Length: 368
Ligand code: NAD
Image (cartoon, rainbow, N blue to C red; front, side, top):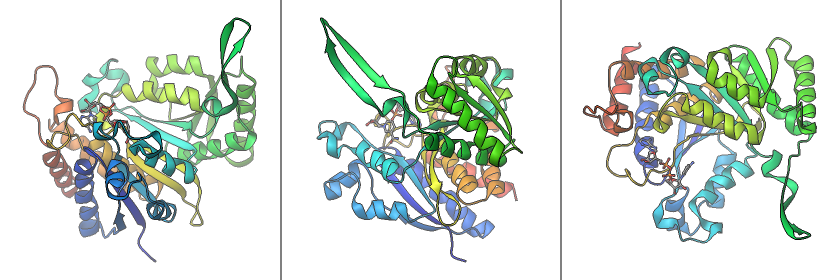
């Protein structure tokens, strides 16, 4: 059987710096666990624009369509701010998401005990938290027609349309149930069925998909506003939350910040299953290219490393190795190692990007 394939797109700013640490981890898995990936690396964002005059070439797009998973660092930077919208670095990322039809955005909120004090919530509320928000990414009110601003009599009116088809709801519901089966087997679906017809349909379709295909998974429903309250009151009651584009935008940011720093947050965007049964997938840290610290060895590589852990679990069927990697991160944090973004107000001496990566590789070694 051929090795699983991985396309790595480090991108701009701190992207290449954090990706260098992922390379160390990939090398470790090859050397110590016999887990070898066919890795190809390519350009995306500003660096692709510099080389080819476009933030994503057709060749790179083709590669992305034909690998088991894509891992991206970050794109953008002040150098590209004045470029025409059509060739801005972010367009490269948007093209990947659109052409791969990545409709399910996964944002885990995971709180390592050592960082529980970083949260604005009490440590016992967030310590050990591990939940997953799945946001529908390609439809809903951000895309629905009609939209625009028009004149009505003597005033302007702004219009956006919340629109969901049955199939759009069903496919993201399936993503949620599939993920729940690999986790704690619980899905909570959130909408506003009390005031929105699209919410009524959302609830009906999720219930139908559940009954027909996933009755082994525990399903509950919650209004999204109540969901926001419950997420801050007692987030550990959830396992997987599935919701639409707008509510997911808000709820995933809320949940992510329960756990502290931007440098810690991984994400994944999944599409339809490929011939091998695994979903099309793009993994990336939530953070951007952080131009203010780029090139200084200060970036926290953990968000990118945890994005690779998600790839291990959701694209490569190595949930056990994903857990090993997450535990290695946890062990390093428990030992007190901190990059600059994780330092408390009383200071201390931060480690560099490379030192953090090396420590995680060492902790992986200790796990054997
Ligand atoms: P940003 O996420 O790059 O940075 C926000 C703040 O968080 C900065 O102070 C930065 O130093 C810090 N930070 C971010 N990641 C960090 C890490 N791993 N370790 C330590 N500190 C970290 O957001 P921004 O400043 O709004 O945007 C900078 C550029 O990145 C812009 O060009 C923007 O368009 C782009 N961007 C790209 C993506 C992406 O590639 N997915 C996402 C967001 C922003």
